[in-house]
Image 1: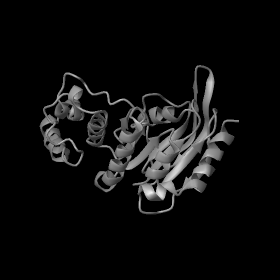
Image 2: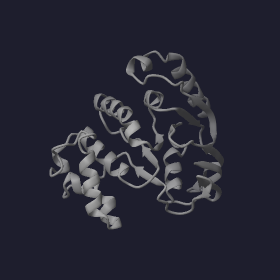
Image 3: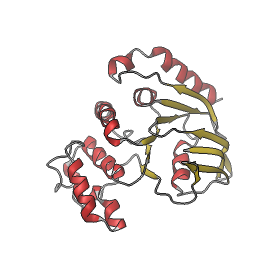
Image 4: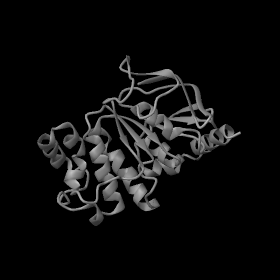
Length: 242
C-alpha cells in the first residue's frame, strides 16, 4: 500500500499536506504522534469514509477511491450489538454480504484460536473486556480484506488486560497473515507489536521519522530492555509537538 501527496482539512484546519508513506505486504506498522495530529483520520481516509482533498492511495499499484474491500477497520470500542449472540456479532460481514452460512462456518473454526470457544451463543454482556475485543477482532479478521486498520483497539482496556491482548495479537500474527496499520498512543505497544513505527508531527502533519524495529523474538524481556529506542521515540514525538 502506498499513500502519496495526501492533503486533508477539517473545520478549516489543515490536518495533512502532502503526506507520504508506504507499507509492505505482511508488514505491521504503527502510527504514533501527538493528540490531534490526525492519526485516526488517516484510517478513515484509507477506508473511504471521508475523502482527501488531494493525493493518491494505491494497493498493489492500483488506485483506491471511495469505499474499498482492501481494508478492514477496527475501532477502539468493540461496537458489539448487545441483542446479538457473539457468533452473530462476528458474522456481521456475512450478514451484510449475503454469505451468512459460509461465514458462520468460518467463524466457528476460529473461535478456539481467538479464546472464545464455548461463547458462541453468549451475549456481549457476559464477556470480559478482553474477550469482547477478541470478538471484535475476529469480526474484523473475517472480512475479506488484506489490510487491517486498527484504531487504538486496546486503548479502553485496563493495563493488565491490554498487555494480555498484545501478547495474544503477537501469537496470532502468523495465523492472520495480513498487513496491519495500527494507530496507538502507547510507545511500548508500538515497539512490542511493530515491524516499523511512523511518527507524525503536529498538524499539518507529515512523517517526521521512521523507526525500523530489529527482527527479534517478540517477548516482554526484549521490550523491557529497549530504553534507547523508547527515548528516541519520545524525543521525536516531543519535537513534533513544537
